[in-house]
Image 1 (cartoon, rainbow, N blue to C red):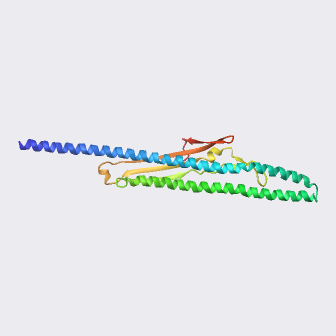
Image 2: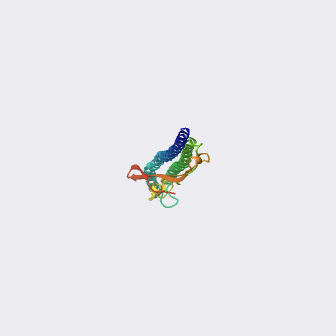
Image 3: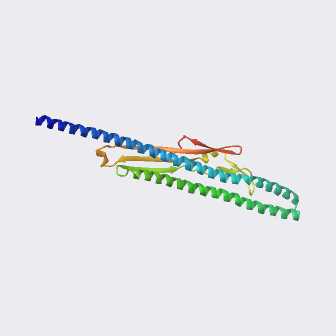
Length: 237
């Protein structure tokens, strides 16, 4: 009676090992799927939130610039009137002084306009770098929970976003407007490439690796003086 008992014991031991192995494979497989889903969700959340915030900042700078158009137009009209009053050489002295005074105001306005544009460009560069760093940090933090089992490689690229403005009139301090293709120029977009692979110790249970690339993008839309943001599905990389 000893032999059948031993055989049964051995059979159940093998069966238990097989079932345990299958359960471990399923557990690891489900965990990897959960990890990938969480990583993708995290990227999209950070990307869309930060892209929308950057668009709002850019629009704020553009609004400041466009608000100066009324002053630009007023100074231009005053300049033309004063210039017309100068007359033939040597010209009306009072009108010449008035022309010079208006030009001083135009140069001051031009400095303010250029300052807004420069500040906007600097803000965009700083913001893009900060968001790329944030995506890197979030990905690293999530990957660290799986560092014992998984190796990860990832990178983040940012689309070259610009303030899509141009002079609408000529002169020292012109009016400014949006460029015709402002949506494409002012797109805020990021591309995230991610790869994971099981480490040698984990490969004894599950040998898995995968790589994928995700992008997110937000464009501005302006109708009259009303701005809105549009989430784009196109890939910009």
